[in-house]
Amino acid sequence: MLKQRIITALLLLPVIIGGILLLPVEYFSALWAAAMSVAAYEWLKLSGIKNKLLLIIGLIVLNGLFLSVWFYPFSNIPVE
Image 1: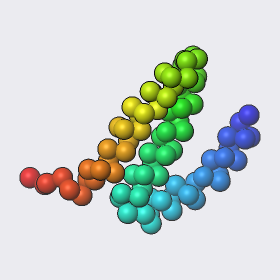
Image 2: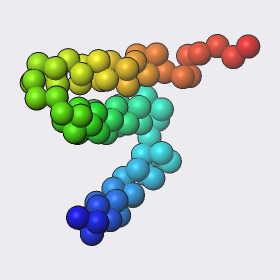
Image 3: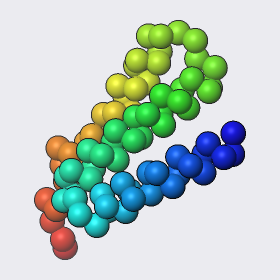
């Protein structure tokens, strides 16, 4: 199990570093939202929720939180 996690981490590390260094904020936010959606789905399943409707509602709420950065990027926040 640990070996599989290490291999996955090593494969995803270049993607994460490339995303941080090369992508504009908006696209990186979308990439981060996709990753968080997968993590949220796994977390919802681990929390013992068996109802598919609750899983879908949880994903919609969490996606809304993460995708809000896409619609209101940090670059539009006025600096005081």
